[in-house]
Length: 146
Image (cartoon, rainbow, N blue to C red):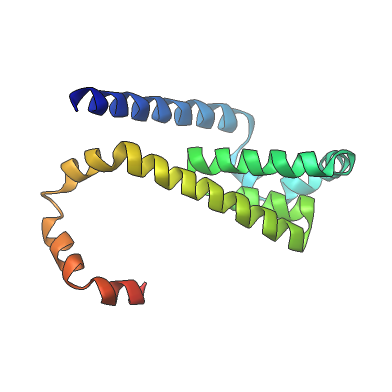
């Protein structure tokens, strides 16, 4: 059991380092204003549409893969949603972005649940024991409220 715990911690640290390297690489090339603005996408309009027209299905698969990686590493999808809507249009873009964000969020949840659940429970169990008991008493009410 101790060996499994060490492996989980090592994999968690590797994931954290990958996220840091990805963020450093990404934000050294792009600013936050660029990736969240529509102007950045509009400036690169011709090249994006040219890529889409050359191989539509390959671009869909590549977009889904890159979105899953984006969400797995960063946990949010706002810039990806803008880009997907611009490249693929309103209806196809919504479908592709929804599917890829769902897959990415599911992968992120599974990763966090498998590798980090025990560590977080151990770390915060004493601090939030009162809150956990209240949640267990009113599960149905909280479920319907959310």
